[in-house]
Length: 227
Image (tube, rainbow, N blue to C red; front, side, top):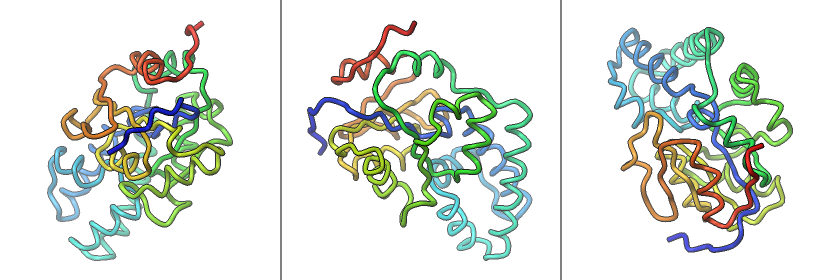
């Protein structure tokens, strides 16, 4: 159980579904690909199996079900279809830009996505410059979420003790990774993952990104006035 009461020194943001509103795109694309390639999936099943996990983890699951060649095709088509949908009009998560303006603590990004994907999605939404040089990918560690590797790596790179970090996540694997890393977390339930799948030890669940600065302040962080 996470019991740290240390002042917060670093806020670690997930990317997809927390900074950029891309999880709905990912779910829609995966449902379409599953129907075409022989693994019919509902949106709820995609959320449970794929959302929050690395592309390597998803590829392994698909390969186990359909074989390596189908998994390769799925991944290649997913990357292309996802990029096209992002170009068609991705936006920041509702309320996110204002929340970032109000948070004066150090921040970084730690995502299951690749650096290339994050440059694209964050760039399209005007958020890349806010985090440039402080963006970490699951491709840099041995094990993706729900293992703690990525969050521990981000904390190490930022020079902050894990107990002084908080994570903002929107997926079950993400909040589980935060707990495994000994970090407190804020589970954003305004996206695809239901609140009950985010709830657990050391996790505060919320539904509006505009609430985040006040939640951080209540947890011992320092926030600005939003101006």
